[in-house]
Image (cartoon, rainbow, N blue to C red):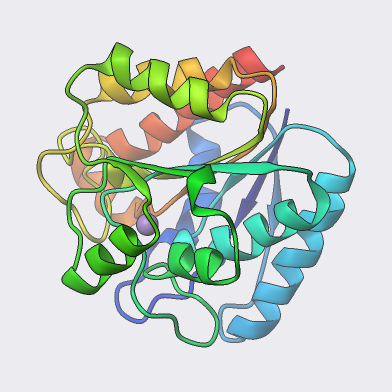
Length: 249
Ligand SMILES: [Mn+2]
């Protein structure tokens, strides 16, 4: 497994996740290659990240990307689609990120952009989405996206998700706000009634054992806020990295 980080954000409002790549190094001993991008030039940073991700995927090694905000997933997943046969996308997120797109997809609409570009919606599962705007709801229903708004039984949920994803080349996108704010408080848009740490790590570990898992991204932590919470959010991300490193090798 190889670790990368990128400071890219494309937020219309709140910033902060661009600081995670430097701050996360205080909580993990794994070496991380930083992809430093210019956030004043959104289109160029998007193209650079796309090109870099393509090179990375061509090396055919399991890769973990730490953001940055959720806008990193659009260029990285596009590169994944370009280089990888039969991709499958699992997203952990409190939000659906399916607002009508702007020119370069932001953290609010990257998923809608991926679907409108033609990615098959039956190869997407959204976990933890519980704050969905009406126009997003309409879009999700129209495209018949499988959503777990909450986890009623983590084993049953994990059985379903792993069976669907198995044998496809899997990309997992983790917006850390999928977890309940009790466990990951340092995010820009916290939503109550999220996944517990136990539910999240149980499902994640089951997914990490899928042989065809190729890539993970982890986004949307706001280090500056995390100082008020004993850095609980960054420690959770460090634990994701540890679990991934143990299982993916
Ligand atoms: Mn998101």
